[in-house]
Length: 520
Image 1 (spheres, one colour):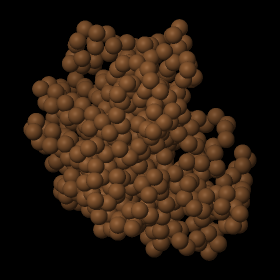
Image 2 (cartoon, one colour; image 1 turned 180 degrees about the vertical axis):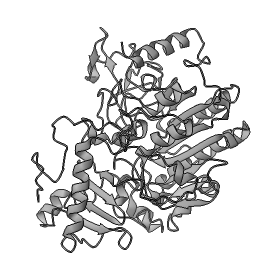
Image 3 (cartoon, rainbow, N blue to C red; image 1 turned 45 degrees about the vertical axis):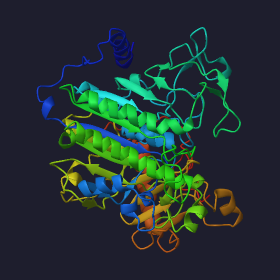
Image 4 (cartoon, rainbow, N blue to C red; image 1 turned 90 degrees about the vertical axis):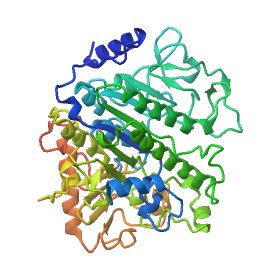
């Protein structure tokens, strides 16, 4: 039995005995001086979707604007992938997802967990350092579903919803979980810890947005976001009555599809349902901030807001732009793409006493950096076989000037598995088109005989319009060599274990197994 499995059994026993308030690990003596940490992860919301960051947003985001004024905003932050599951993996493990079996796309319906039970997660780290830990919201990293005999199954028709659903948050470092996993996928039901709350016994109506599958009677898409917000506020209030610090991982279900603003926000923007949903997302963040104020925990809590990837085209860019709202104002592309619009995201940190209010940082960072940052907050030495790609942001948050870039390179990854590399001002894309859904797609780019690679200077050309690969072959060679080293080393954190990766196809890497460059 693995250490995580033993802890999982202990958590379930504690729940049965109504003793969840008893920590599973003895808290260090200095616990009371350590801050609470709340990590809020928006879903499908680009850098340009926050009013304070984009003068052409025109969608009011007063709560996020307030958070920016009270903390530090990063202008060059990137999700680990241009789509959902890979980014979530990176946030919780400090490791690029393309180092796993998930080298393109997302974790699919009814698929098993992506995170190995033996891998340390951010939740594990906080839990083992005396924190109470909770995950409330969207998981989308896979579960183990079971049939009536208790055997694992990936077939929807065989799933027995009276059985535990395992491999999720409470086996990955969280004392408590509440959420609906993926808002537009079945089962349409709440999951609490390792059980569904009720049996999804009716089919999803064809008129309701989302993939067909079993649904709990009376299920409402509009109720999902307010419900996870209310549960998070309740958690914050409950933790104020204890003496132990807490870590809350709060992955939102918005403004991802289904675009389902609640009745209170329907029509509030005067622009579109999507704009209403962005406003409701902002309101949820405001409720978290208010809960901290109401419980006198604001000065003792680090609050981070960011997003899993760029805005989805389901927002209807053309409709928004007809109202003067330009969510592609600064960057090209959207969710799924290797272009920056696919993965450049807001990253805002409020850390009272450490981060100067209304401060900014232009360093290139990635969401995989959260784990090493949290480790430094905890004064915890990361094991050499964990958080292999994570770098601490604490020097930046303290306003220190770095002698060298935080990362040698930052790697971007599109939905189709195409790589891009960022180093300083330069960005190299190993794809002919967007690498995703934005035109030109790879098939469109191939038909147009576009070059197999793209090189842009992001300082002078942030919209990636002028391909310079022919003018700077030396930059292409340098960044390609850097990527080869990072992939083959199996780690980028200097003190992480650099084991040799198993031979495998990494997706759309621009070289063959012998290391020779391929001009596709």
